[in-house]
Image (cartoon, rainbow, N blue to C red; front, top):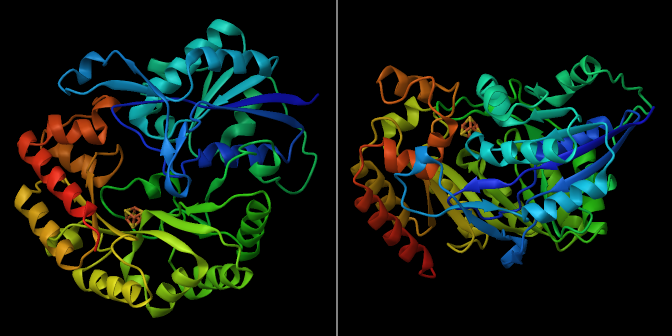
Length: 435
Ligand code: SF4
């Protein structure tokens, strides 16, 4: 019997959200994995972008919803981003009957969106098994079971556990092919002009605030030919913007990203390329910078995080000031400017004062690059989380809602909230100045 599976990407419940070529990559991988089996896959995306801006980034539609009591200290509107509940129910009914529903989660602090999807699915079709997967149940399995009440949790990668979970609820899948079908051939995102692409999984670094290794314990790179086939097919289907969402896109560049970019530049697809995740500065040599230019990169984000040398080393040693200076020099030599180059700078790290943040801002201004301020938010299972627990700032029962980056810096850091807001405004003003 063919198993009818409905995959759902739920709403984002947050104070703000903007679509930077986002796709639920874990859910797409699950769909591709299931394509080897006798399964009929359908998909509902609650996060369709309403207004498209430059390079196919865009705003989600939203509705203001009551702020959860735990977040009352934040004086901003809490919102549900995505399609309306009525649209969702209509789409759900159109996709029925199904045998099982799989719901993904991305940020743990967005769990209320998944919870609401589960409530609606239950109210429309009471007996359908619901499996909740993604980052939230992987990091917070007990919390996910208690607060969202799915039938089962898919913890970690779906290829490791999904077949067993399906068997436990009475479905034994039959393998029907020896290869996987890419998501864009499975009726998912067929009309999207952008795509998020991974050329690798995981990261060989171990930064103390990052969950990459908790989600992918081994770093691996995809076969170059498979990546190139995806890019060629996406171009053929009308995709004009591709965002690489790798955690370590440039690792072993000579044998991985360089050949990929050489091929793309030869093909002259005219696709805009973007790297929204912070790149490793130390790997941006002359040739990488040149290949970025000729292959069509438009958005380049560099991972720097802090001006404090001791903290650079203590948090994972992924970069130094000199790595950043050299990377920016190489990129500018090949025609990139402040318009393209943004550098991530964190605030709110354990024991980090605002002077350190201001020193970092001064340093980045001296390089004439965009400053992308990012709020630290603790992720369960990381060393940074443990440090905060040891210092008594948080405890193991902290609700994931309080790990929201907006919330954590305003409610749980000892910063003066007004001073942070002033710094943010000054940085935004500086970023708006062209070169
Ligand atoms: S280099 Fe980036 S992805 Fe890798 S562990 Fe550090 S923060 Fe995470």
